[in-house]
Image 1 (cartoon, helix red, strand yellow):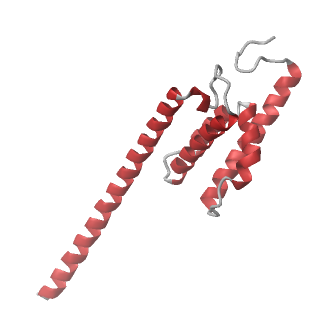
Image 2 (image 1 turned 180 degrees about the horizontal axis):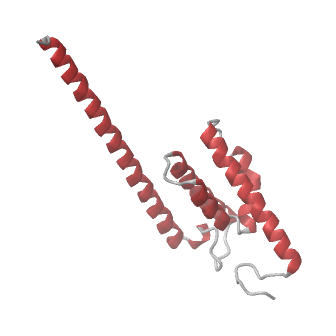
Image 3 (image 1 turned 90 degrees about the vertical axis):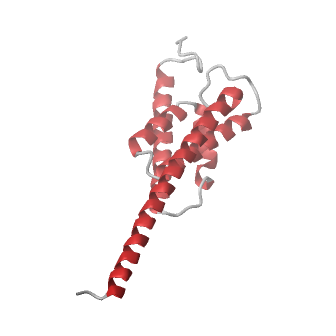
Length: 159
C-alpha cells in the first residue's frame, strides 16, 4: 500500500494545480470584462464629445488635439485587445482601414507612430508593423483616388 504522506502530497499538489487553473480562468474573465467596459466608455466618450471621433463626418471644428486623443485611445484599445488575443490580424486591419481612411489619422500616425510604443516584444513589433502597413496602404489608395476625381471630405459625394 502507498505511503499516506505521499498520497497527501499528491492531493495537495493536485489542489494547487486546480486552484491555479481556476485563478487563470478568473483573470482571463476579468480581462474580457475590462476590455468590454473600456470599449463601452470609448463609445460613450465619442457620443458625448463628437470632436474626439476620428471618423465623424460632421465633427464640429475644435482643437485638433482632441481628435488625436480619440485616435490614441482607440489605438491603445486595439493594442490591448491584440495583446490579450481578443483581436486577430484581420479584425485589426479592418479597424485600421476605417481609421486611416482619414488623412488626419494618417498624418497623426506618421507623427507619433515611431514613438507610440516602447515595448520591444515580438507581438508589439508585429502590431506596429501592421499599423504602419495599413497607414501606407490607405495613403496610396487615397492618393490614387485623389488623382482620379476630387471628393468632398466626409460627404461621400463626388464634385
